[in-house]
Image 1: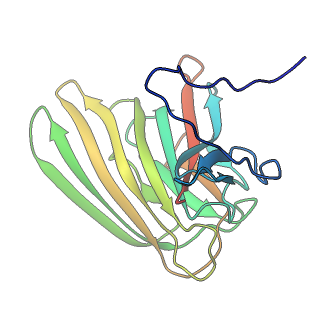
Image 2: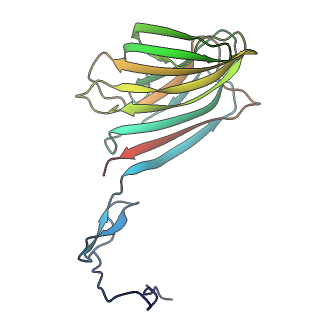
Length: 219
């Protein structure tokens, strides 16, 4: 067998030399970059780096994601789709904590909600909470979707902050969108996160929920 690199078409091209790096990449996923002088090297390219996708189609009291935050990334981006609340008049909640989530971060949260349909907005805030509400109570069972940024969750010198947008169907007249933010009380390291509810379970056998996590590479 063999490997080959083919030159560009002769017409319109010029002579040049590309000097390859002396070793293979030090980290999986690195890309080959080069200077204008044609000296190539392996580099980590900035942007979203896919980490994992997890699905659930069963009723559970909590949905836990353990040991997912490391020092590899300072910022993480997470999407959640169709997390079903199986009991009316409850909120979907998001928490961060230690490895097995036996200790959850205390802090303050705020959520601004906009009504799409009937019009209007609401604002709620709380302190001393180990969670952030991602939606308001609804008079029916609902699926909730959205996204979240986690800022330096694993850094023990910085207070953990997470924030994002959620959306859900509240009743026959209203769809709602929420903008939420949580700010931790203490500078602690957090490596796991959890979805929970104010009462009842989340998840349904007839509704597949999906959570996808990415790391944000800055170089």
